[in-house]
Image (cartoon, rainbow, N blue to C red):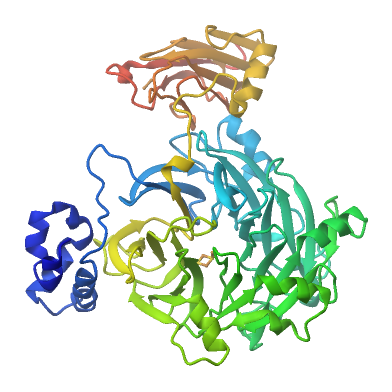
Length: 637
Ligand code: CUK
Ligand code: CUA
Ligand code: CA
């Protein structure tokens, strides 16, 4: 973008011709704005748009030329879809979806034996609500090993392997209801995965205390990020909403919006202040080591008492129903967004030693500043240059503010800490900047994950998409550059440079993802890479076959109605991207089988008849012909 262009803000239309790459962010509305068309439902949109069109002058392009790769991987949560989505940044092309807590019709996730083993008991739930994806750390930097994510709907935490982009572990957290806030220990390494139990419940929740909410409690949980086993829990007062950990491995902090322990809206809003609870991880570990804990119900997880008066927590009062909790990337502050208060509370992490040592008169002495930002502050992210960016849900804005100036202002200096407010469309929840939950924040791109999209996209009926907007923050000014409609409902994202992630393009035959399946085949005396066999064992039938484009090793197999059939398919193709599938018609049976992968699925053979099975991932010119017959005989024959 030249100086000349900047001086002629009404030339967008011509510029689009000259530089088609800009089309992606200027789009048609900018042209309409420039033409001065008014009226109808477009008015509000246009006013915003013409302003944006100018703001986008000089912004970085989101265009990634054909055949070239994006600079960043973006990991998006899938909200109540239960999955994780991968976007390329800056193009915002959706590259992949990773089923996690959901059933997947394309890959067979939730149906294959491999995915069922990973999901365990919780496989009985067909839904999930994935809010907070986070990438593992070494010394405060992302290390590209794992992604962890919570399930608010069924109280689970899952891990995704980033070498194959598959979910590889899932744990249901005991003694809690709803995992909401989820964060990782940043140093020296992940370490713990911390999970906030959001809804307070009787302990144990076995029918006692139904009508006695005063005796409901929430627990904060630490999961071992390597073994994915629950390490310990801490019982707290109030509830737990969002959280974050510091950059030393010593402290974590969580917002509480229900210090009242209310069970209805009015009760939950009764107090002018709720709190941020700060956890002292070393002290909790010591308490567990010293046997200073209890257990609850059937669970043998150590539960340390962290309620008021405990040595392992401190409660810092902050204004009304706080929501987001985000550690600044300089490691200095936990920043809690006020939600029902127009403020954010900056907790100075270096004062926490004194807070726990009892050297401060008041818990509020750890507050470094409480800047007023606008209406409905929800979440904050960072550019690594001393600025914070907070979403304002009610104002439909992102406010950029300077942390150091906010502190000076709090200390009485007459200095303005607000740098800029940018309209977003509309009602933002989380926002997130590139690398902004690591010490490597690079201040390039900011995303505003807006809950409402209203008039921004072609209408698709009453259920609207969300709108994830992309903002260039590399300069002084935030510049809106791109709208991305998303389906239900990304809450949060984490974005890292592409060189942080190293993937396998073809499975290794000894991969743990399907090791148990291989082991069982070996017990049947099967060599998966070459054998095509049917083994009958009472009314259990195990069918083994290879796949190699465009054929299955077996073009037919015979079972009896009502048999429990397990089909194990090994894709012996070694060619990158040559995936096969296996789908049995009228049986609800489907799975992906990628190069060098073994996949298996167990089902009940239906009523007598011929049932075709076919390859449902397009693999070859003769892909349609890649099929076979399951011949189902009557049960008594
Ligand atoms: S919560 Cu969704 S907008 Cu679950 Cu992270 Cu704030
Ligand atoms: Cu094999 Cu399609
Ligand atoms: Ca409250």
